[in-house]
Length: 338
Image (tube, rainbow, N blue to C red):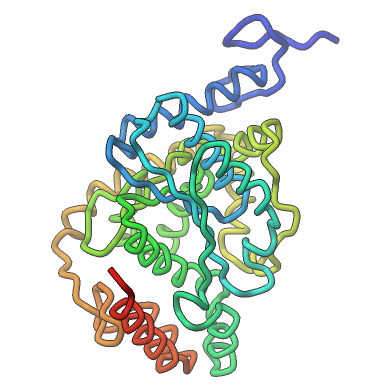
C-alpha cells in the first residue's frame, strides 16, 4: 500500500504523524520543522545574541547531543551570530549510573567538537566539591536521611554549572530540556504546591541574579519523541543503559501519565507548558522582591541562611570536608599566576 504524501512538501511519502497538528510528514520536513522550531525559540526569546558566550551542558543523552549538533550547525550557517562562542562541558557526578558513565559517547562529543569548533571539557564533582555524589548519598542514607539520588545529583549539578559558568566567563548555559521535560516540571510543581518554582520556569529566566548564570532551553517546544527520531537519523547516539534510580523518581510515572493523557488530547504537553509560562509571569514580581543572602558557610547566594548544597553536605556529615576543599581552591586561585 502506498504511503500518503507529506502534508508540507506534497512530494515525498509521509513517515511520521504529528498528532498535535494532524500533519503527516516526511523525514526531511520533520527535521526541518524541528530545526525551525528551535530557531524560532532562540529568536523569539532572544536566547542567543551577538557577543554571547554560551556553555552547552552535555549529559551525554540524545537531547543534549542534539542541542550541541543543532547549535553548531546554526552558527556555521549564520542562523545565530558567528561571533557567539560555544563551549561544551560535561559533569561527572561520580557514581556508576551517572549520565557520564552510562553514555560512553566521548568519541562522538569530540567529533562534534572538532566539526563545529566547540571546545569541550569534563568536570567532576570531586574536583568541584571535594566529594562525589556517591559519598554524599552514603553519608545521607547512613544517617537516616531519605534523599533521592536524583535530588542529590540535581542540587550539586545546578551549583556546579554556576561554578563552571563563572570560571569560563559564560553569559548563558544551554540545557537540553525538551517539551516533555517541561510539561513534567509543571505537573510536579502543581502537585507539590510549589508556586515559587514557577518564577524560574520558562525558556530563559525572567529574573537575573548575581552569580547565577542564566539557563536557556532552545529545545523546550520540541517533543522528546521527535528529538529521538532526529538523533537517530542524524547518527547521534542514544543512551543504551537506563539508570536504576529513575524508576523511583516521580518524573518516571508522570511520563506515562502524560502519554496516556496525550492520546485523548494531543496538545496536552503544549497546554501545560503554556500554563507554566503564564504562572511564571505572575510569579516574577514576587520573586523579584525576595532578597538573596549569602550562605553562612560557603558564601554562595541563597534565599536562606544555609544554601541547599551546604545543607546536604551537613546532613551527610561532609560539610567540613567540603568547606576545606573550597578553601584549598581559593588558595590555589590566589597563588595562580594572572
